[in-house]
Amino acid sequence: MAGWRNGRAVAQRTAKTVIVHKKYTPGRDVAIDKVAHDLALIRLLQPISPNVIKGFERRGIPRAGENVKVVSYAENRAEAPSIEDLCHVMGEDPRAVVLTCDVDHGSSGSPIFVIEDGTPKIASVVSAKAVVGGQKVALGAMMDAPLSDLMAQLNDVRGAFQGKRPGRQSLAQQLGRVQ
Image (tube, rainbow, N blue to C red; front, side, top):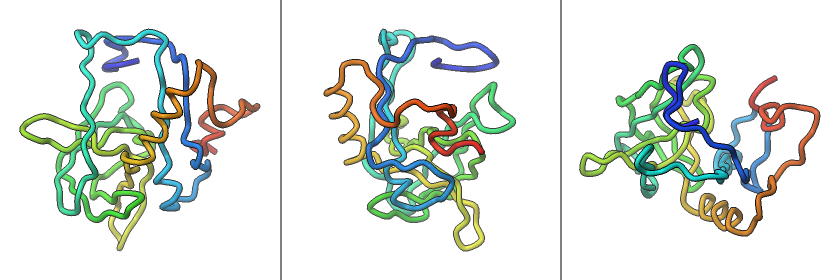
């Protein structure tokens, strides 16, 4: 569902292909290597017209001190997205980015935007929340090499789920998102 707000979506589509990064490991631990590969791509059976929903351009890795915005549907606000625009990049690692953004359960996968010339561009996605030096932070996956790997994988498949085999647990449980 795209454009979800107050119980309605602007567009709905069925997934044709879902790919989870091969190096991602599920679980509750917040290891930096895990955050680095906490990415997945979904190819839709039918595309959404740019006249209905316009996609966002990708942008390079956000740098320390740079301002960012996070748009998320998190716990206790699943009906409408909220924008946190008073946060910045605390630091970066070649594998992940550390943000002062206050995220909560349900924020995982939320886009992290950098505004360039008045245009929002996706620079990362929220992977986890943590505490660094007593301050609540958000951890974002880098979208350079890991995303390029996923896009190459997506172009090599023919509509089958790639990654973890289906099990008795829900997908959220298999990915370590729920107890």
